[in-house]
Length: 251
Image (tube, rainbow, N blue to C red; front, side):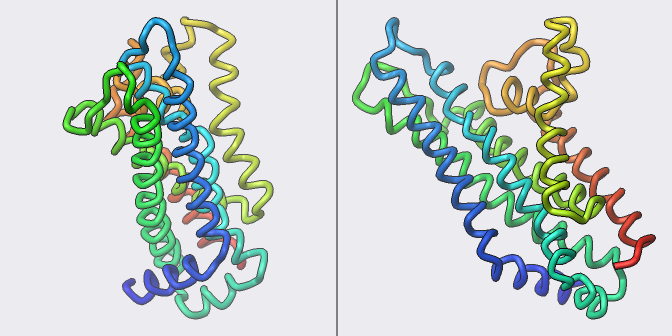
């Protein structure tokens, strides 16, 4: 297993798209946080701590797709290049290959997600420095938890991407399916207004924007920690299904 993990890490870090996707995720969240802060500098009446913070992590909307694409490409990139045959020849146990990919993908995405989440937070706070707007301190456990759980959410999205990529095996189709899984359900639920909240609380995007990346969660949703655990459950299910198909299909 250790050798398989090292192999996957070498492959991941040697691909240029890995660094681009991670870097753009961080920049996107930092830019979103800074933009929110700058927008509130002249806000009347003075914005509250919660208003600033609840919007500072909005860059996660884009970051989740970028890191999700990173997870997709960890598998589909090998199918596209034909390298998957060499990988399976080096490690014949396909379950081991997928577990190694999940470990490396999860670790890399968690690191990038946490850096991006802190970048969004800091961007918002630095942009309001020198104003009368109250700062949101990481010394507040509620704020720190939201930042950390947003990073964990992004890592779970990358693992969902890994699972979808293993199932579909085609980069474009897998990214399209991932996009649909993230955005289409919330659009459908939105058609039902407040009555759709019972179903909407299971939707990733609604969990992110109204329970995880905020300090004033919407009533009726799962709490932030429960929402992230649910995302981890989705990721585990996607990877598990991908593992079943990986063992049954030809390379």
